[in-house]
Image (cartoon, rainbow over all chains, first blue to last red):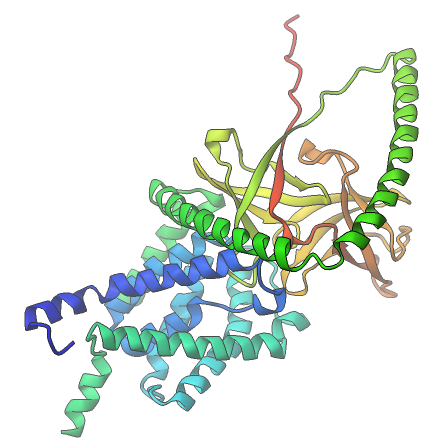
Length: 187
Length: 268
């Protein structure tokens, strides 16, 4: 992106949110239309969880919340769950990731994997609790909820989604706020 | 604190606007856009799958064809026998002067997308309110019951399948006529029969069929097969696991069930 003028660079950065939403839309399209074509064991992964974790880690509060509300709503409209359930569920994760960012700022592959794995484990408890408030009976203790295969699938695919959004940020020259803070503190 | 209050207010308002499956014009627009894209991608994927299936995976086609030919012959003879019974049944009903019931009307629809969440099992179909689809309508497949319409937009509708954890369908055990509520367990891709009394006669491999409660589904449609019965020695109910008749991940075409027209009330 060295060939771009400074105003073109800032324009590209301002379109980051649009690119991120398009990325989520592509994930939604892929997940919702591929289920009949691939074996059902590969369908149990959450596409938005790594996106929300990324937003919590690499965006400021308002920008992250705005993106979360829109993408969470888009996700809700493509699910048979009551509208609002996933928005509330992902808001918890957003604040969780914002809080975790003060302790663990996931930059290395190992720290990203750890963060996604912990979030996946946490999600297995949080979703049934949120679902209860909408009169939905998603069981916490069913074996399917704690299937090791699903946990591993979510962690591995979540890791790749997290890395892909990082690449998107780099392509659109988006600098996360915490990187600025870390940079200043090291100076 | 102010931030938390603000976010809570926005979320509460958002949930209130969307209560009981209501959709705003923004939602309808978003669903139309995503539905259109899903329809396009789904068509493309199915086209490729069809190509692979037709040209590369037809190794045992001849053998299967012979087996199916013999099965067709057997089924044809059974249909003829069934037709005889139908004619006899009709004649006997006429003799007893039974009133003929209006049949449910079916409308075919194509599945354009599956649920994006792994914890819920819904499908999106390419029929909406423009085709007369209404909330709560039954959705069936040639293999059995699929679910109910949950959300309707002008072009697309979302269906809550019977494997969805929030789905509840009234069913009857065909052999013993024991009645229960079938609830989904999406994570296990199976269902659970609820409110079955300990003394009710339910066995493994029993067939479950739809009841005519609420006229949502045609009566006697195949719903699933009992896979396990776990008697509860302490409680009054027993746990019954059920395998759904329809493989939700493989369904491509479904039928919407329009309820039979109610006779107009005569004015005395």
